[in-house]
Amino acid sequence: MMRQRIFLADDHSLLLEAFSKLLETKYDIVGTATDGRKMLAAVSKLKPDVVLMDIAMPNLNGFDAGEKLKKMLPDVKLVFLTVNEDPEMVTEAFRIGANGYLLKNSAASELFQAIEAVLSSKNYVTPKLTEGMISSFIKNPGGEKVHGNLSIRQREVLQLLAEGHTMKQVAANLNITPRTVAFHKYQIMDDLGIKTNSELIQYAIKHGIVS
Image: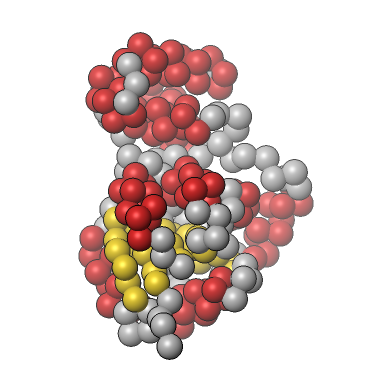
């Protein structure tokens, strides 16, 4: 019988290695990546059954990478494996199309349970967070974006700037002009009522765009 194919994305190489060794006893680990952009490039070619991914990753965070992934390959099962226990982040994960959400301190058996659940076309949320998630959904029943009304491109620009890249570096990374980067930056600041670069970074951290 063919084994299900798993792709892993996390910015900590040691964790990638540990999870690979754990999961390869039952699944085929077809690839790994340390940031969201590398994940998208690899997954578009490899087309795994499940992508197991962290939220906090450089260059392109898990939420934005996951949203692009589900538009590109809607049948791929997406499971977030993270340290973030914020119920609003769980709500955001499922808003962008995730199939599962569990914590890195979960037992190994729960990781296998989550993968099997999503492979059976079920959603999985670690029991440690379900109560908080219900509360968050009650407060936000419309599933409004945690990131506010920023577009994916604006969030890409915001993440790279918050990570310390210059406007020229951001422009080269996104294949746009520095002038376009500047336009996006000041449009974001105007829309969010933000006055300084430090406030911009604080916003990105608060909303899970950077760790």
